[in-house]
Structures are given as structure tokens and as C-alpha cells.
Amino acid sequence: MEMGFQTIPPSLVQNVLEQAGRFHFEPEALRSMVLELRNLGFSDDTVIRVLQRWPLVFLRASVHVSNKVEFLKGFGLKNAEIDHICHAYPDFLAFGIENRLKPLFEEFRDLGFSRNEVWKVLMKNPRLLLGMEVGELSRCVDLIKSLKCRMAIKLKILSKGPLNAAIDTKLRVDCLCRHGLIRRDAFKVLAVEPRSILYELEDVEKKIEFLLDKLGFSIECLAECPEYLGVNLRKKIMPRYNVVEHLKSKGALEFEVGLKHLVKLSRHKFYNLLVKPYPECEEMFGGLKKEVQVKARHPAGLWKLFKPPKFSNSAEDVRNMKLFMESLF
Image (cartoon, rainbow, N blue to C red; front, side, top):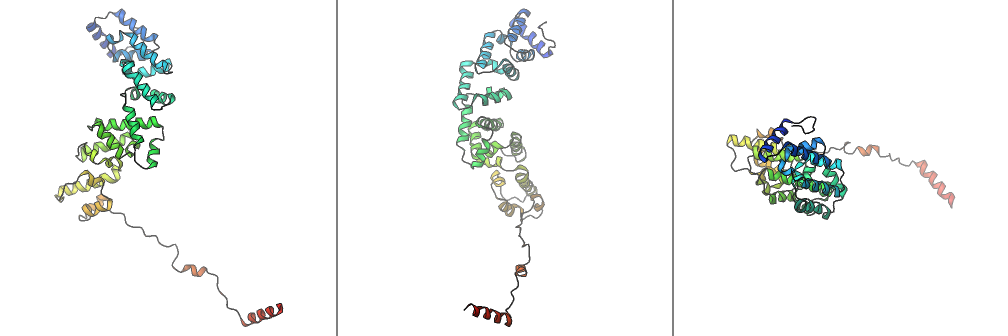
């Protein structure tokens, strides 16, 4: 089947043949679709991506595709930029303009995001921005505005701009929801522990996986103890986990250790409760930091050695002073 491409992926050929048989497409109709997509400014790579992603029955109504292209041009995007977006995220072509794209871009404007901000994110990750539901970004912005945390944390969250801060929030919410947390509780977790917005998404994933696989807690426990996402996994959680597992193996635990014990107990309280009675746990816990006594740089009283010596007045000095005073009168 000749379509004018230098190389055609085998998966595309198979896909086209299956759809042509199902929807009774003639080869000439397929060639006209390819030509129409090229006339819209799409490169061959993008045309192939679109053909692989969408059935021919959808592309037959090419007027809908051209409407999406014209919509992006109205936003100020050039042909090369539109081609990049459609290549990176072909699903965008299936969205309705009136019920999806237009309300989404109006939301960006109502939130005060500049065209340049939106353009940068759109070029970097079209799927992330165009794949959002209408109203999703507004909820993330409202969360950031309502955060009750130290100003230094809030300023750091907003350091890359309000749009990037909202996107970082969305990514963490999506991460929590992928692991089974409902969206309402995901927002609650971030509201209580906003530091998790600053941490790399990979680190948040590791903490959640450790919570589920190693600690054996459910994802719903995060709603009760959001502070877990804000503590250091390697320095705080893992040593305490090792102590608890050791005591469980010995049958020495007299109560059930919950997530709040691993997170909320101070180092001193955890040490006194579970480590101090069992000396073998001292090494795996890392001991307790001892108070450092600051020693004086010099021995006590050394300053007296540097005090200028006091010389007593001799009889001759006294006599000379008296003669001097008498001469004044």
C-alpha cells in the first residue's frame, strides 16, 4: 500500500489493513486522509503517530482535526509547534473544542497564567497540560493559596511560578490516587504535609512503596498520618522499621506499632520506648545523640596572665609627685 512514506512501521500497516477491512476503506480514501493531514502542516512522523493512534473512521471527518489545528493557531502557536503537540499527544485530536479545549484554556486565563507560561509547559509536556480535566488546575491553585505552613516552604513551592506549582501539586495528587487514595484525601494529605510538593516525585513514590510493601500499611493510613511523606525515609523510618521488625521476631513487642509511632514519636521517646530496654537494638537504631559539651579554649583563669602587671609606687616616686604638686601652687 503506497502512502508516500519512506519507511512505514509494520504495526501501522497491520492497523490500517485491519481497519480498512472493518470499515470498508479503499486505498484511495486512505491516501486522501494522509494528504489532508499533511496539508494541515503535520510531518510524516506525526501523520504516522496519528494513524497508529486513531481509527480511520475518526480521521475520515478531517474537518474536526482541522478545527483543533485552527484552535491552537488562535492561541498563537505556529505550525511546527502544533506538529510537536500532535506528535507528542495525538489524543488531543479527539477532544471537543466547546466542551473541553475552550473551557480549559479559559481556565488558564481566569487563573491569571500568562500565555508565555502556558506555552512553555505546553511545549515541554503537552500530555500533562491538555490531559487535565476542567477545574482540576483550579483546585490545585486553591490548595496552594490555602496552605498553612512556614512562609519559607510556601515561597519555595511558588519559586518556579504559580503554574508549575499547581502542576507539581497535580502530579503528587495523581501519584497518591494511582496507589488507591481517593482524590479528596490526596488533597488533604498535601494540605497537612506541603513539603511533599517540594520533594521529587520519585522520592514520593519510594515512600509510598515502602509504606505498602515493607511497613504493610494501607494507603488510607496516609490520610491519618500525612507527616509520613515529610520525613526522611533513610534516616528516620528505616532505622525504626528495623528495630520494630527485630522486636517482632523475638516476640518482645507488647503493643501494635502503628504508623504514628514510626513518624510522630520524637527520637528520644522512641529510643526510651523500644530501643533502651533492648541493647542489641542500639546499633541498628544508631544510638542517641549525646549532648556535646563545649570546652573552653583556654584554662579557667588564664586571662589573669594577660592582665598588665600593677607596679607599687616607690618612696622616691611619692616624693617627686609631692614636689610637682607643690610647684603648681
